[in-house]
Length: 387
Image (cartoon, rainbow, N blue to C red; front, side):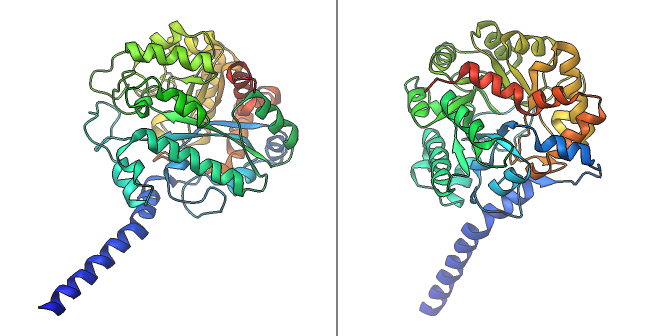
C-alpha cells in the first residue's frame, strides 16, 4: 500500500512538473502563429526599410514566459527579431485579464484565463490574485531585460529618453526602444491612486478596456458596452496631465466617442483595423477615424485576420490607404498585436513586407516613413513628459 501511495505521489509530481515545464510553452505556440506570406520583397523595399525609424504601437510579448533578449522559435517578437526588422520603438502592452470563451461580441468579467497562465508560468505569487501586480511584474520583466541587454534595449519614459534613442540609433539596428502600455485599466482595481503606481513603474500608454467592461469604461466586447464611468473620466484627465497616451483600442463605440470628445492630447487606436475594409465590430468607423485625426492621434493598423479580414500584407496597406485617403497620411501607423494570440503573415523580423505592400499600393517614400514610425514619434513628442 505504501509503495502504491509513493508511486502515485511520484506520478503526480511528474505530472505537475510537466505542466509547469510544457503547458505555458504549448499554450503560446497554439495561440501566436505565423502563416508565411508568399509576397516577394524587392531590393528597393529592403533599402528603404533600413533607412526608416519603425515604431509599432502594440505587442503582448511580456505576457509570455520567455526571454525578450534571446532568439526563440515561437511567437512574433524578441530583441534579435526586432533588430532584424529594424524596429526603432516597440510598445509592449501589459495584459492582466482575459475571459474564458473570449470572443468579439460579448464577454462577462466573471472569469479569467490569465490567473492560470500566471500560476503555470510560475510568476511571483503576488501576481496570482492581483491585476495591478501583474502589470508591475511586466514592468519588472522589461526593466530586467533592459539591464541585461548591454545597451541594446532602452526603455522610453520621457521625451528626453526618446531623443536619446533616436540620437543613438541613427540608421543602426540598436538600441531598440521599448515603451510600456496597458491593455485595459482593470489593473487599477477600481482605485484612481493606482494610476500613480503604474506611472512610477514606467507605463506611458493605456487602453481603457480589453475584452470586458470594467470600472472605468465599457468594452466593444463587453456585456453592456457603455461609455466612460465617473472614474474613467477622472483617470483620463490624470493620464493627460501626467503624459500618458490615451488608447481607444477595444473601447465600446460609446467609450470611443466620449474619449475623442474630451481629449486634449493626441489619442491613439493602438491596434485594430477600419470597418471600410474589414467590417468587424472592433474596427473603427469613418467618423471615429476622423475623431482620432482631429486629436492629432494615430490609428495603428494590425496584421491579423480580424483587423484586416486577411493575412495578406496587401490588406494591411489597403486599410492604411483608406485612413490616408479619408483624413491624411499623418494619422496612420503600425499596430501589429504581435504575440497577442494572433495569426500573422510574418513576425517582427519580416516587417519589410509592410514596406513592400505600401510601395505596391502607391505610397511615396516620404509617406511610408510617416506610416512606419514618423507619426508615432510625433504623438509621443506631443504627450510624453519632458524628463
